[in-house]
Amino acid sequence: MPRPFRTPIGLQLTRVSKTVSRAFDDALAAAGGSVPVWLVLLSIKTQEAANQRELAAAVGIQEATLTHHLNAMAAQGLLTRERDPANRRVHQVRLTRGGGRVPAAARRGGGVRRAAAGRPVRHRGGGP
Figure 1 (cartoon, rainbow, N blue to C red):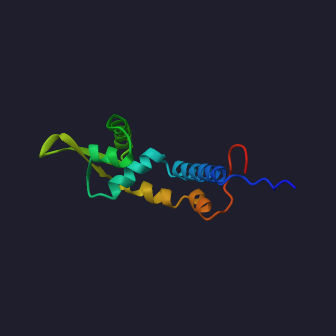
Figure 2 (figure 1 turned 90 degrees about the horizontal axis):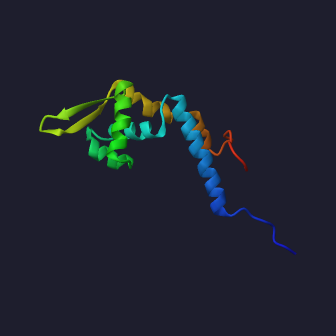
Figure 3 (figure 1 turned 135 degrees about the horizontal axis):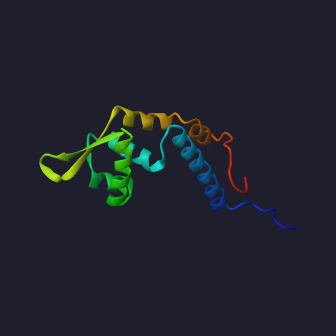
């Protein structure tokens, strides 16, 4: 008698990971953000002040890519960038009040809570 087919654990984990990731993306979008914006803001918030090189390393992106995000985020009023008086080549990055609210709003995202709690989350794509 053939053994019943069981979905491999790796496939199950991949599907769950994608579902949770999409729910998190949706929650961030509802809060007016994105994963890169959230990572940058959260990295700044967890440190007193950060320079761009340290921030790029913490987020896991290239400095040039970070500069692109920082320019857009500064234009949105989420953060400020100022040259370090001790070293004019270094920019210090700090959150504004608006920037400090985005990570908190993302944490309150319902899709993330539902996904983490194992409750149904709108699934996109093929398969359960």
